[in-house]
Structures are given as structure tokens and as C-alpha cells.
Length: 525
Image 1 (tube, one colour):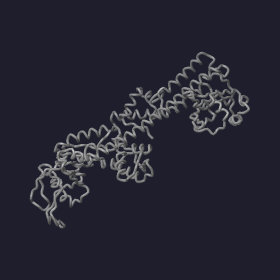
Image 2 (cartoon, one colour; image 1 turned 120 degrees about the vertical axis):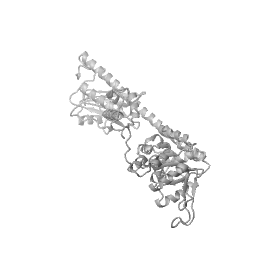
Image 3 (cartoon, rainbow, N blue to C red; image 1 turned 90 degrees about the horizontal axis):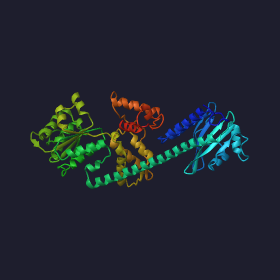
Image 4 (cartoon, rainbow, N blue to C red; image 1 turned 90 degrees about the vertical axis):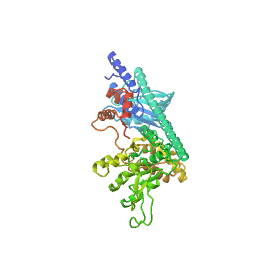
């Protein structure tokens, strides 16, 4: 429906009502749109106005503080070139001076309606072939922040007062929505800065507690609900003598957790004895664990106490216990059952009281089924299993851990780091962390070595893609996740408003936001 020039907004009541409905739809579309979605919504609104009113081109301009004018979006009829997005290189100083002064510019016949001083505009309209033009200034808080412009290329047209008034209202809706979006973005940025500062302060508090208290659960402060539950379990088992099996990927902090459990136990007055079962040759690990007599084998020039003897009355931490040779597993099983063993080369039985905390990154149940790990030893170790989550499943802690490492390394290096660059923190939180907390510490240390000032810039190189998270294929949650993801992609990740994902799915926006968070969906960068 396209009203003619002489008829104003419409020759009939039906046409006027249709136009009023269009204006109402355009206003409603911006009710809940924020962020980058506002500019896309303005572009859609311009397109609808262009089609309904038969304009040849519509453009929405924003005026920057330094005097530039930026075309945020433009819509054009077939055969007409829209204005390119971005800062304008078009010389129309007279026109934009009028708009900045708050004046509406109505030019029915071009170039005849232009004053003599509008030389640059005259040159442009002659080159572009514009026959008629209307520009309306847009104000926010009494200040002109932009303009909305309409051009006719194929024929002259009138610009009735009632049409100008309604177009001005639509332009103000666009401008208000953009201003709200800008304010929201600034608020979000301030919120991120507050979060960053809080993370740093919390990390410093953790570091200070760690310095004062030594090995304790204070060193394991976390924002992750999963990790907090783990700490609660560890705190409950710590005062007992139960064997603890720590499960999880390499670098997740299993040794730190073992230290905390020992520090909170009744054996904390004695040192924690540590053994890395994967780091010792198979030929030496028996003697390392259980000791040897002089002359037990070639090179055994003196008697040696084993780690279990040293750990009598204390705790022994068997790291990478899944790598223990099969032939030694019965001897470890016996120690776990009754605390008895013999040194290599001796028949004398030694009795000890050593609590065992074991750790592995292997799936011991699978190792049992494959015959590389004894079933009875597995059950003896698996008295109180604790699954330590990988860092990618506790992303809430990445900022806090990063600042904790910055503080720790600052003391050692004599460096002063005041902030971590925003893009670096975003990269840290998006990275998959195959090496977990250990890798994070190494990355921070490398960045601090290379730092040139008080701002830390982190380079992750060719980071592997984020590990997939979410429900398993074939489950109901997986089907729901796929359905919601498709709706988000179709709406360009816009949740609210007309044609938003919530409308497509027939859900309330708040309900959809809750489901997005639960299913771990994130907008691609």
C-alpha cells in the first residue's frame, strides 16, 4: 500500500489504519531489543517503511561526538543503491549543519529548493539523481544525536506535515532504542569490570589465606557449585582414616586436594609423603615404595627405607596409581588391607599405619576389565572416590584462578600487574584447557615473563576448540538443546521481540533464557 504524494498518508480510512498499524508494530518491535540487535531491528523497520510508503531510499544516521556522521543502516528500493554503513564520505555539510541545529529539511524539488550556499549538496544530488528529500533530526535528552532521511529518485514527491510528524515519531523510537542499547552496553561493560575487580580481590584474599594457613581447603576457594560440593565431600572425609581415590584429568589439582585433605586430618603434624608411580622405573618402584636391604640387587649398597615406612603415622599420596605395574599390585593391596609388607631382599615383615590417598587420570574400571589393574585393589582404593572436574566445567573459577596465579608469580618475579586485558580474559574463559589448572598457571607465567607494562596480555596461540558440553545425543535434553539452538540461529541469537527466538518457540523470554543457561548454550564469537 503506497499513498500518493497529493493524498498525504492515504486516500482512505483503510490506508490510514494500515499505516497506523505499521507504526505500532515498529514501536513494539523495540520493546525488549538490546545490544547489536537494535541496529538490525532499525534496518528491518526502514525496509518496511520504504516498502509501505513507496520511498526510494531510507537512511538512519548517528552523529558522533567528534563531528562525524555515521550511516548505521539504509534500505533502498530495487535499482537504488543504499547508503553504505559506516562514517560518511559524502560532502553534504549544509544539510547536516541544518540537522545538527535541530531543523527538519524538506526539499520537494531538487535542486531548485536548495539555497545558494548548499553548493556541496547541489553537487551530490545532481550526481546521485535525487529528485526529492526529507531529513528529520532526532534528539535524546534535548541533544541532536542523529537523523532519519528519505529520498525520492524516480519522481518528485510531496512531504505532508502529518507524514513528517509520524515519520519523526518512528525516528525517535529508533533513536531511543539505540540510546537504551548504548547505555545497556556501557552498564554491561561496567558490570564486567566490577566482576574482574571482584575476581582479583577474591584471588588476593585466597592467596593471603594460603600464605598464612599453608595447605588447607582455603586454597581451594571456588565459585563453581560442582567444585564446592567436591570440597564439602573432601572436608567430611579428611578427619577419617578412609582411603581416598581422586579421579580426574591431568592438571585438575588432585595433588593440591590431597594436600588439603592431609592438612585437615589428624595426621597433619607429620609431612605428607608423595610418590608419583608413573615417574619411577618399574625396576625401582618396589624399592621406592617398600624399601630394600643392602645387597638386595646389584647397586643396592645400603639399606633404604621405603615411602610407606616414612609415612608411618602420616599420609602417603600415590599419584598416577593406575600406572603401578601389575606385579606390584598385590603388595600394595596387602598394605591397604593390614598395613604389612617386606622390604626388597628381606623376609622380615614391617607393620605401618599409613593412610593412603591415591590419584589417577585413568578409568580404573576399564583397566580392570582390560586386565591391566586388579579388581580387588580397585575396590580397596575406591573406598571414597572424589571426581575432580576439568577446568572447562568450572569456568566460573578461571578469572579468580588467573588472578591468584598473577599474585603468586608477582611475588616471585617482582612484577606488578594491575589488570588483565579484557580480550585476554575473554580468551582465557573461552579456551578448552586440555591441560586444566596446570596449563592455566603456565600460560599466566609465560604472559608475565613477556609483559611490558602493568597490563597482562595473554596469547594462547592456536587454541583448540572448546570441548563440547551439554547433554548426550539421543536424550530428551539433547533434542531440546538442538531445537532451541536452531531457533536462536534463525533469529540471529535475538531472544525477545518480534521474530525473536522466544516467539518462534512459543516461550516466555525469561523461560528461554533459563533453558539456554541450563543447556550451556553460548553465542558464537
